[in-house]
Amino acid sequence: MKTTIETRVRLKLDEIGMKFGTFCEKVGITPVAMRNIFQRNDCKVEDIKKMASVLNVSVFYLIGEPENSPQSDLLMDSVRKENDFLKTEIQYLKEIIKLKDSIINGGPHA
Image 1: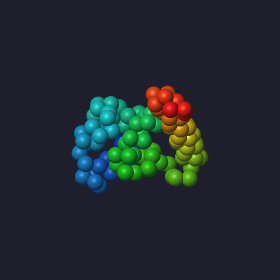
Image 2: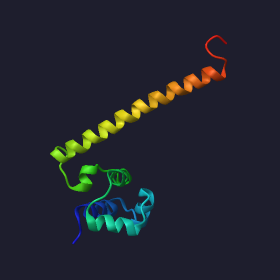
Image 3: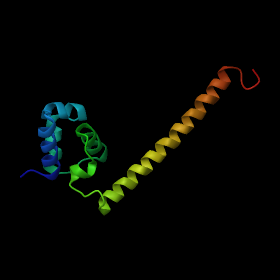
Image 4: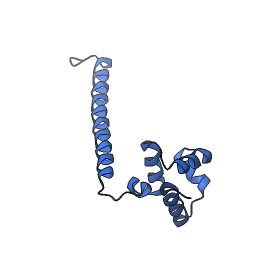
């Protein structure tokens, strides 16, 4: 019996005319590992996000959840927190680059 993730992936692959092997390659998961994901109907958030991106669908579509379910709210909260963290990290890196450039160029008095 096909699982939700497998059913949704295969439907979308048929719709867009993409071969399973090509899909696996674009996601960065071997076909054997992808079949294991399908059998378990479970995978890492990072992997399901890659699958959704390659297929141009939402994560919620792939896992069979409505966009406004409690599970989707939790996932979106997690994604928002991750994005906020990454934005903060980018700001820190920009400041570090400015400081490095300042030091290399002789500081503020150069």
